[in-house]
Structure formats: structure tokens, C-alpha cells
Image 1 (tube, rainbow, N blue to C red):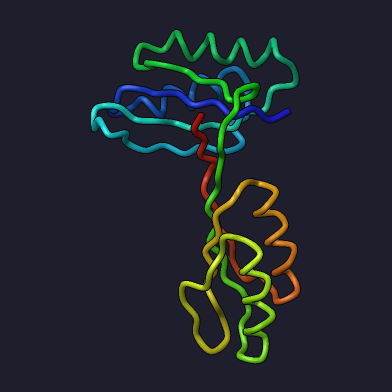
Image 2 (cartoon, rainbow, N blue to C red):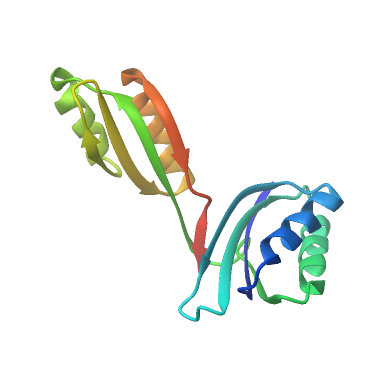
Length: 156
């Protein structure tokens, strides 16, 4: 099962490497990771989606994170009311004859064309994991050339 956790850490060189090393050394997988500064530039906010088969493994992950000296707080969103979002940029095949069909699909989601040329368009979309999955499914018919997406972001 996938769990979303956030970790506030001191914004210092090597902190991300220590967090990633902790997961790697114990054989835990980070399914997604997003890191940025907070309003305080000395603190960074990490949002991770981790794979943990049961609650015991998740608790072990949180305990191990707490042992790292640069970790300030850990929040587990698994059982907490929260909002999460991902951002995706994708390049799709594009032609003027498909424009209205593409825009119809994009209108159903928080998505828009941010750039287009004669044969390709770059689409930007934001939403939860299910919304992104549905959007990708809808755009598959036009041919997805390239896809990049952020890790999940979450806030209580």
C-alpha cells in the first residue's frame, strides 16, 4: 500500500542524500518525492509516497526518519484529512482537426495547452492521481509522445 508522508528538514547540503540513503539501505521504495523550500529558506518540505505493506513497516520508516539529525517534523497523511496534487506535462500529437476534441477532454480536468506547434502540443495538468490517470487515458487516443510528472504534494 502507498502512504503519503511529509518531512520538514533543515535546508542543508546532503540532507536529501541521507533521507534517500535511509530508504535504500533498508530496502524501502520511494514511489514519488517532491522537495522545496518553505517560507523559511532554512527549512525544506519533502513530500514522499512510500510503499509499505503494513502499518508496522510505515512506523519503522517514520522512526528511522526521526533518527536523522536534520529532520524537524514528520506528518503521515494516511489517516489524516488532506489535499494532494500532482503536476504533469505531456506532449501529444496535435492537429487543428483534433483541437475541439482535445479541448473537450482538457476542460473536464484542470488541464490546458501551454504550447503547440503544427504537429504537437504540450499540455499542463494538475490533479490527484486518479484525475491524472483519467486524463492520460482520455488523451491516449491522440498519441502521447512524452510525459513528465512531479511527485505528489500534500497538505493537511
